[in-house]
Image 1: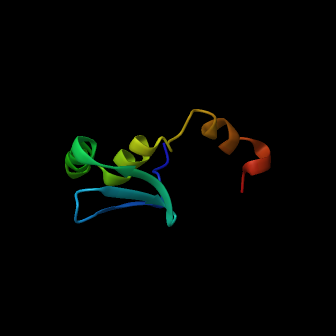
Image 2: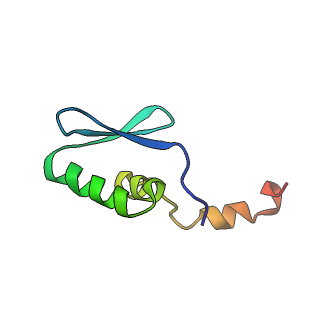
Length: 73
């Protein structure tokens, strides 16, 4: 499975976590959800955790499209 690219997150002074994808806002977490997110990021791969929390991860058809003759390089 290819690794999610372009995700980043920043913790704000008030405890809010801003998640961006390629510089555009992808989500905002506050309170307990922000704390849970930061705990998961510290214990796992940050890119995969961010992708899962924002819902931007592979849905199953990417492999089929990648293997199509028209998409081979």
